[in-house]
Image (cartoon, rainbow, N blue to C red; front, side, top):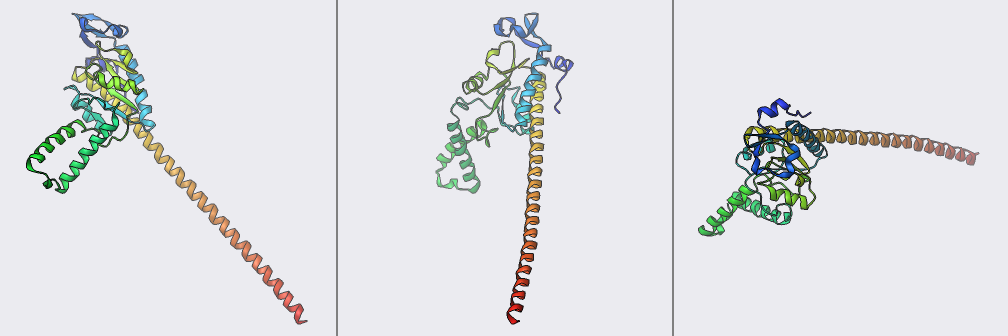
Length: 282
């Protein structure tokens, strides 16, 4: 089972530090404990409560075999998102949010297909058909696409939920998800609009320690859910195998019974034929 960080761990990671009071969003007031030296202080009891709810949601998501897309394009979040996403085998975007990634997903798939075809041709040495200038231009374009689509190359459908580290800098991702009614899980700092987020986690989205502890909890919960899904799939496969064996055994028993019955019937017919022959001779 996944482990949630304690209040002490949240405090040590600096999850309670918000933005300057003047930058605060009025709708975040219910999640703010107070202010100190002109900086908002987030109520950690609420951070703990909402983190637990978010983790329960992503755990069930993983358990039911659904896809969670992790998004973190700010500098300090990139390596954390990439590392944890790879650990739980989840798709991720860290280079930048491409406008229309969700709302125009068909076009994104076409771009990914172009990139895959290019990489295949390059591997097979088929790029010699282009001039040196064309190869150079193509290489530049593909390097950009490769950077953008690095974490979603095998992504073939719109995600079932989206996790966002910074609800302000990656607000387009949240808006696109809302437009498609895709649940959003996000860290909500004091400058965020919580009404756009399905499962908000009040917390510091700037400090590396804070991002690491919050993203770590989400990734861990999703990963554990996926493990449970795997166990369930194995049990279902074993159950199906046992059912097949049982059916096969039943079919074998029926076949053997039929053989015995046929043999008995043939013997009776043979005896009857012998008796008939004896009567004719007499």
